Image 1 (cartoon, rainbow, N blue to C red):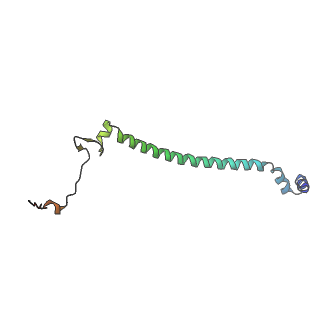
Image 2: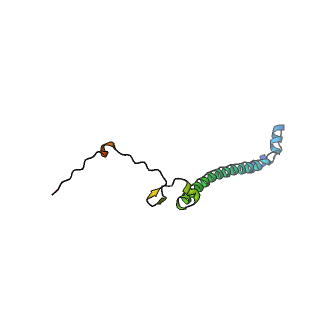
Amino acid sequence: EKEINDTVQQEPENELAKAMHEFEDLSNFWKRFNKASLDKLSLDQARVQLSQENQQLRTLSKQYLDGISVSDEILSHNNPLFIVNNRTNVPVRIHVDPRQRHQVKTVVEA
């Protein structure tokens, strides 16, 4: 270990080694800078996901509240849950089988 420390502490001999030795102190800065950049990117992605989830929950909440409340806006739209005097404001389509229209009922008297 002592040899390694002595080698690191020695003055570099060529120009490139001198330049690298000057910027050695910046390596910790760049490590921290890169970590901070990755953390920011991760937080941005989490924010986008949470924003989408929030929008979905708001939509579901509005649908639920529209289903349980009665207001002019709700009554103006078709709502299958709103029934007054056995009538609903949703058009009901009943499929009638043509074979059942002319069905003859058999009566057995005892």
